[in-house]
Length: 112
Length: 108
Image 1 (spheres, rainbow over the protein chains, first blue to last red):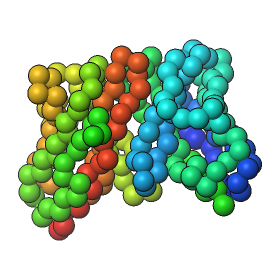
Image 2: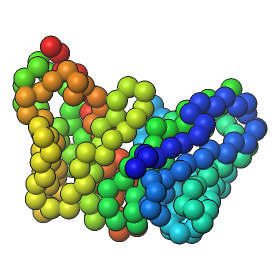
Image 3: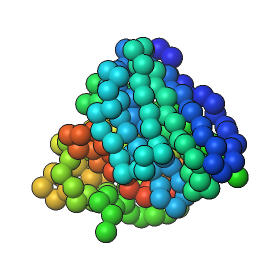
């Protein structure tokens, strides 16, 4: 089986812009979770989608949003980018969220 | 106080040594995860456990639910084990709370 893929792998944006990141889960997995990793805050949970519905959300502002499509692929959007949004964004998939997660390689976002 | 605390923050060992990384959590959990992150960012899920002990090769993970404590052990450590090891607690809501990570360096 192919692993979790994320595109793009690297991205440079400027403050105020918006960005969309994509995650393709392992085939058959219906749960996709998104995480932000920064040197200061470490890994933090953003949200989880299951069967096209946001099932759980972390403590991030509304500028961070996501969606999941019928094929379980997920996108994450960040609007009005701030310097502090520079981070590694990781997605992870699992069959239904109750088993171990498989992580993608991440998208490294730099906001200038 | 963080909900998930790991110790030590940094660990240097000689090849062959037995290594222990500790994790304490203060939240109710449905599962405790051990993750490995190599330079460059790739994360591998090593273990997910809710009770007892799991073993995979040279890696062993244990959890004590009553004490809210988990340990990751590496036997016969090798330089390729050098990585950041992260403990994470997940609740029934599937949100994960992460420890700050333990940076392990194994010297040949």
